[in-house]
Image (cartoon, one colour):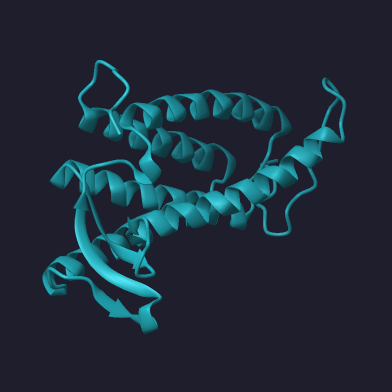
Length: 205
C-alpha cells in the first residue's frame, strides 16, 4: 500500500511512532505506579523477543516449518512494512492522536491521584516490551523480523513482540472500559475517589 505523504523518511516515521508511545507509557508508569514491575516486564519481553528472533535466524531454514500439527508454521522473513496493511504515516498519525487522548487521561488521573493496579502495570509492560522489540528491529535491520505464521494460509506472519503488544493492548482495553464506567458514575466537576484495586499501591500520605 503506498504511504501517505509525510515529510519524514519511512524509518523515521516508524521509529518516531514507537518512541512516542513508549515514552508516554513510561510516563504513566512513573507517575501512577511507583513500582518497577512494568519496566521489568518490558525488559523481560524485549530479551525473550530478541532471543527468539536470534534463534529463528540461526536455526530456521529458508522454507516454512510446520509445527503443532499445522496450527503454526515457522516462516522466517524480514518485513519492511507495517502490520495489517497500515502505512507508516497512518501509524504515526494514529500515535499522535493516541497521545492527545492520553494527555486528557493523564490530567484526569492526576486529579484523582490514581494508582495503577498490578494488572495495569503488566499490560503497560507487555505493550512497552512489544514496541521495544519492534523498535530494535527497525533500527538494526530497517524492518521487523517475523517468523510465526498461524495456519497454512495465515495472512500475516508475526513475532513474539507482536503477541506481547497485542496481549497488553487487550488488557489495557479491558481495564479502560472499567475505568470509563467508574468515571461515568460521577458528575463532571465533582470530587471522585476511584475504588482502589486490590493490588494497587495506596496514595502517598
